[in-house]
Image (cartoon, chains in turn blue, yellow):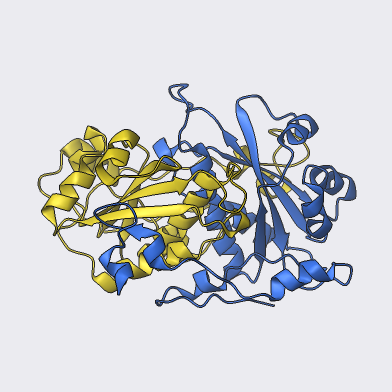
Amino acid sequence: MTKIARPDYPIQALLTRRWSPYGFADRDIAIDDLRALFEAARWAPSSYNEQPWRFIIARRSDRQAFQRLLNCLWDANQAWARHAPVLALGIVKRELTQTGAANAAAEHDLGLAVANLSLEATARGLSVHQMIGIDPDRVRNSFAVPEDYKPLTALALGYAGEPPELALEVLQRDRSARSRKPLAEIVFAGAWEQPAELAAD
Amino acid sequence: MTKIARPDYPIQALLTRRWSPYGFADRDIAIDDLRALFEAARWAPSSYNEQPWRFIIARRSDRQAFQRLLNCLWDANQAWARHAPVLALGIVKRELTQTGAANAAAEHDLGLAVANLSLEATARGLSVHQMIGIDPDRVRNSFAVPEDYKPLTALALGYAGEPPELALEVLQRDRSARSRKPLAEIVFAGAWEQPAELAAD
């Protein structure tokens, strides 16, 4: 199951095939694939090469660990994410290791890492659905995350599918069309909201 | 010129070829390539599909516009970024359009978009070097960025190379080996700093 983007200008097929499903098939992720996903995350760039990203993962095959991680998500996310074979938390180190100064790029750089992970997943027929809807305090308490780290996101990982237990309302989100703002609304030149030449034609 | 990552486990070649050079060749980016880069950014996922990313770009061929953008970077970044044929600023919308609530994922999601952009660049033989070292107030004043948007990053875009004017100290950074923390230091399971199975072997 895929839902391919329809870009206005040609881009790499891998990028058009990346998609965040709500429905996951009842199929586990092989350990080699899972390892490759985090290996891909590892090679993202980061400010001062700080690599502020940390992940806590749980496989559904380990029911207790999975439930503990699932409990850190908002209820609305638990409803669909519980079908994914693997869940992960995305956590950032707040400060730069070398200087102790605040790392203004920390959250941004987690995004860079997870984008790498998502594209490695896409290349392997897997999908990733990220969530900002987590309970950071519960993450901190459940997994003894130190104060200088900030839990930010969760990731559901697996093969896109339609689990029979999934609410129709949620399944319909997977069936709706994908949409994005036009380039002219996001790329400017010269001044704010003045579309760049590349976006204006 | 490339500097390929040496992953511990096999990942997509595109990801290993992505690299952030300090040295850029004196060669412009074709408009079709530049457009594809931002088109790739456009198709990144984002929390509530908010697409909080905005970009302001300037081409070196337009000397005045380029200088205005270059002036928003820290001096140490200007020293090498001035050779890139294209510069861009990465800006995020702080709040969710639908509710007005703070968007906790805004900076993270800019990272997702720029990772897409960087991989589209890599596929086209181009390179991207991101910077957190910008003067946000100068960006705001120079380009009339509204208060509800936050300037966060800059990007230098172009073909990797060795401009003769570049300081040897900077060039040497491009010649040094690439390094990353091992997987066992970034992927945990069960508890903090307890390496996940996939990272432990």
